[in-house]
Length: 122
Image (cartoon, rainbow, N blue to C red):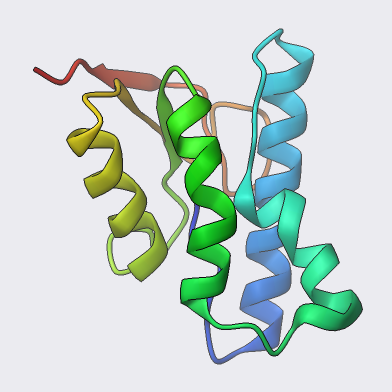
């Protein structure tokens, strides 16, 4: 599940982290196997890897993109401008993976939504 994270304001980063965790939790509860780079990596980064750059984290996350059946994009504010989200979308397309967008409100979580629009990639 791709979602934006980076922002100069730490409060925005915390809000995005919590929204990604809540969304991943809702999807897991619904029976979907979900890997969220933000939910799964931000806490690890805060414990000694916070100086690692974007390229490092994309290297860590890429195998998950390869293993997954589809890519879901959590459309929090900033998702369209997010470098990481855009890279993950481009890589999903290059791998011919289905791509879904989850809007922020439908999962019953602040900043998150359950309307999933699936775009099957040729």
